Length: 452
Image 1 (cartoon, rainbow, N blue to C red):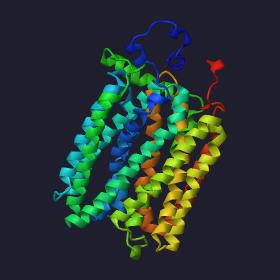
Image 2: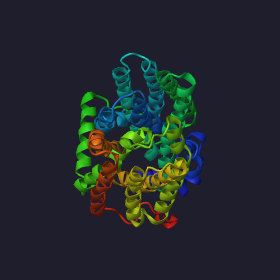
Image 3: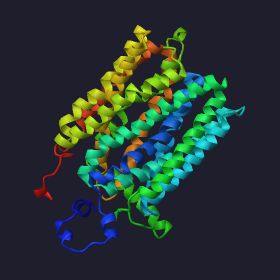
Image 4: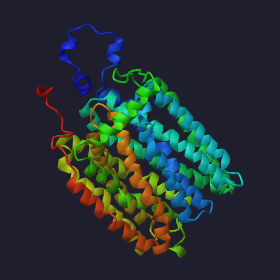
């Protein structure tokens, strides 16, 4: 499949082509700008609402750090087990159909969460709808990631990996930046925290309605995203088994899985606690920022630093290959975590200092996460790349879920200062795992025309 996709052939140019054949060729850099950024923005919004914004909301509504970390980490489970139904997305209908209908369902799920927040048992009911939202989002991820690999040639995939990561994180910033700022403003305006956060989730639902309308119209129809059916339950079962067996037969798979589980070990814990640290009062070791201030720090300098880091990572990997930049990226995603040790001990009163510290951490994440995304594409490459990529992301989610579940308990046991020191120590396994992964030195480099 890849050979025919990447060779948008010279010989075909000598033959007449109609509009349909032009539309179904793998897209180049120029046309991909119409849908890659918005697709990965759409992929990021439900994830950030489920995994990050919900934690801030529960903090403002009086839930403990231990309960927030435990229950919101359980929401990772749909992303962990999504490989079990990814073959269904791979063989039934098209990735395009799955994308647009999941986006409609996600918008409805966000609206349902908004309706539960003012209720008496809001924690229980909102968690139930967040679970449903997480399953819809995980299914959307399967289809979107598969569509990305089917609709673009390998070099364009590598070139856009920084763009897609950046717009995915733009969604994170839109959620924990703009929407959290909006929640802070509405908290002051309404005088009712429940009503403020309910309105925020309604805004997110409206945003997804617009994304659904846009992608229904603008997504291309690549030939590789063909309309297929498994024919029978037996055939579907064999597809599922074959996808899993072929994945675990890949060379050096054990080393690759260790990398997926350990590369983000420190971040898995930091991401759960860092926003709570910013919101918590100084009497318990936090910085005592307002909801609006937390949204602002993530939504201004954070997004600028993230954008630079993500795009730079993709461009450099496309120029020199992933192997050339691997260790710089491993260091980049891990070492900036030290800014939280500084913040916890220095307790700076200057809001500018806090912004600079978050900018350093966000740049490091943007640059360093590029290596993780590219290595998943590297491992997933093959006939079942959609299913195999979903399996990779399942292990990535497991690597975020398990450490995240206990992070709240660790933080409340150690306190914020010692917890952030622990996070720094937790970066060591990621460095060790990166040392052992197999990687083609040419992976990601631009091919010369003579190499086709």
